Length: 113
Length: 111
Image (cartoon, rainbow over all chains, first blue to last red; front, side, top):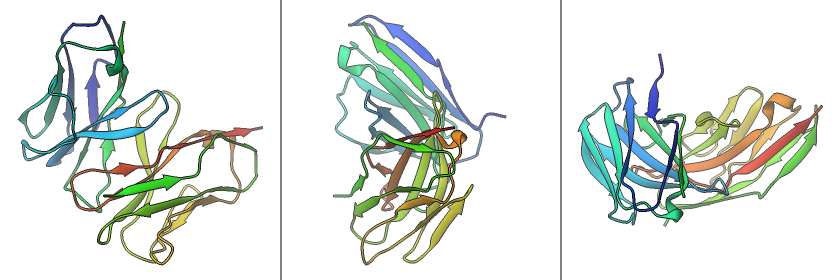
């Protein structure tokens, strides 16, 4: 059983398009996250949700809109894609914040042409 | 704010060599500290963690000790294998619903 799954694994699209990435966790965790990893492998938090409520929005452009329909899902919708959005996006979950391991999904490699 | 500084790579070693990756942090309060590993083409997985000063985390032959006095959490392994080739990330959590990551260190182990 996959603990944290993301779809799709690869996403190639053109500038200006709108796309979504889905994330699901079957661990019963309360907290979910989106991270962005750039081409130099640097990882940065984008959003954190706790019990379906947005906790952190780390100065992400409002073209990015997360949605959490329930505690097990955190989807990421991106409007008007730009070249600079090309990256690997990781979803993660944890029982709560602090001291607890975060479990990461396999990542979605987004390429904007 | 919180920040993590880790040794820049890439690091290339021969099998059975000693590996150390330095990590220092800046944080308010008493953060939890983590080392994550990312194998090629995969997501991150926890390697080890420490939640309070002087705790030692260990896993798969890797060790790191939470040193509050030097704000450090250096990763060490006494004898690396080819299968340890990966990107290693030091991270901290200050109970603020996010992990702050270091820049990552790419390690390549040659047979």
